[in-house]
Length: 263
Length: 337
Image (cartoon, rainbow over all chains, first blue to last red; front, side, top):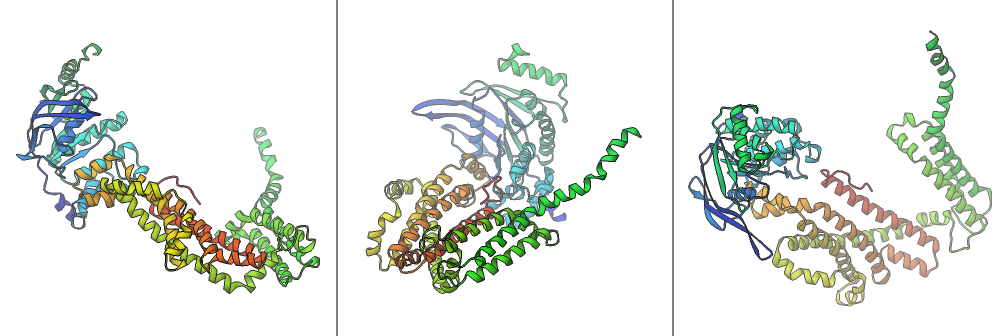
């Protein structure tokens, strides 16, 4: 246990993320489909930024670019001044589906990153620590099909956090969970982020979730996505859902998304 | 009190009846099985054989011994642990087997309702197992050697080819058309060519078995690798995986359920090729034994060899499924063989 504490002791401080005039398009059977148009966002180290926008507007594409899974057609992305060209374990993605590897136990799933980087042998306690962090140590030998949706997503979170990412990329990670699990995991996310200090990028289409979690909410337009508004959320954590300040912001945001009539 | 009296009064007579019913349910089929085997034993000993078979008497005695086992095994199953339970579960099968054997014995050896020598009695087959055992065992080992060699070569090559096609566009470009052209041809069609191009009939048969195994294994491994969701690769890549990791730790494990379907189909195809190759070219093995027995009109030997062959093929599939269950414990709801 002492060893565990030592290994996990260096908190991975967040990295700065610069998205500079990024444009991107998909090629669908010969026709260009623009998805991102001249997007520029500067994220401070340790910030929690929520990206909010209509469904299918290109938010997830932006995350793939940040992760390095794809290259932008124009513009550049930088992590702490160095250009993002490839995926790197300092920027880890948690997807909407947990995408756990069904042939691996929970422990082996969490160990995936360390194993892929070839450092698992010397760093095994980090896996145990990450499982502890999400409260699933008891399920280390379970297979993914034995887990509930919320547990599977927690494992996916542990699998990301074991790498001590500088930027944690969350692509609607709570989107498919039931509302109670969702609220619990929102609180867990905030406390993890506060403890570890990584920079967080969260794609969501739930304005309330964005406001409860993030320092900053960026609202996108319809596809091709442009930055429509950049809103600071200066409220201490833990935040209360009924906070009139947040309710006011929520009204503004829904207005930006063209949904003010329903409020 | 009056409300209780009804329910109090009832159970006093019931337990004895219940116990009898329970005993009948648990041991009844065992007793019936025992009776069926006694019938079989009696049918062996009661009448004289119409032909000349040396094992009739021993078979009758053996049937009585089995009857005794069935009786004491099922009645005393509670004292025999898991073996007793297993015997009780199989008692209905034991019963059916006893009845079939009795009918078979009576219809052949005793009254010759079925024409001889095409339908030999059970004791004739027992005689083959006792008197021709060395030759039969040699044939079994020859078949296993040939099958195993060809199957393992075919499975290994098929697996590697399938992974390569699934993974690399360049390999797919060259191998796919060849596969489409050659794969669907039944491996046995190559038999005449294989037997004069290869130095020995043994190597020719190995090649044919490998060919028959390789095709389904290749196609299913390939489809398995091709159908791995891109999300798995995305996850692995963001966690720092190199291409070799993506192949060995993502593509192959994800494709493994498909691979086993291919291995299963390949095994079936390899049996067919094995038997035909042994009948036509190889001078050993169960296929050759069958052919030889037919040549001598030794019909009992044919049935005996057929029974051994079915046991062999069934065991091979059982073994494959056991390996699969071992490797794919993470899957839920796999077919139990």
